[in-house]
Image (tube, rainbow, N blue to C red; front, side):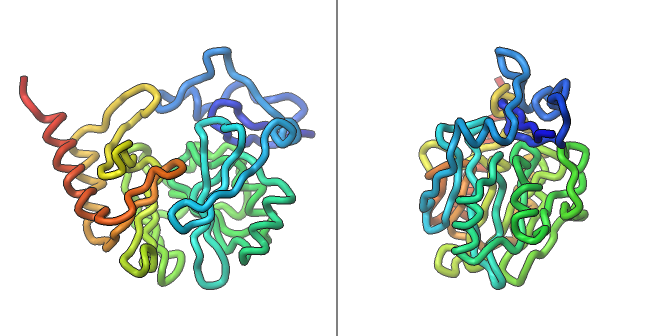
Length: 270
């Protein structure tokens, strides 16, 4: 029986003779159901219509589907002792892409920022000996294809290694997570934020939303919580959610300015 992927968000669902009746991730107000209605692709159909392409994204190997699929996810491969850590995930794993990751050192783990990036985590994990998939337990209800290697960590942080630390920031989702890479940016530290803190088009600031497609902003308390979670971390660079949406240097100061700007904007009296 086929595995099914939601055409709108890219989440993969268990094998069944017929597709699911709905996608809970897309029915949530942070996402949306396709204007044409809910649609599904089997894993095989997805591989026929799209290919996985590799790019360098500010010094990290990145992978995404071409033509763009779902929300345009791209995953990044962060080097670590003992292998690579895939940050966020794409909706497809092909033999060619798996072989390429193997040639780079293989996956030791997968870490996910929030449910919009779960994609084909089970396929990627299985391809590398059931590599652990770290996602925050507060978001466990959104897992669409349960898999034994999923590690629903708890609390405010979880250390993958001496160099890599997952930090619960909240905001976009209850368990929304950023990844601190201590050795990134030539040893000055890097923060991989997904869209928990969205790098703006000027690539000199970030912003925050509860729902990006439906334009629902976060309140000041949620943004302050994100700021408190990030404050102890040293970083000079931010890797955002899509190709080239990064702050190459001076990111810590840019983040702090962005928090102050955002809170001032939503708190201004008329």
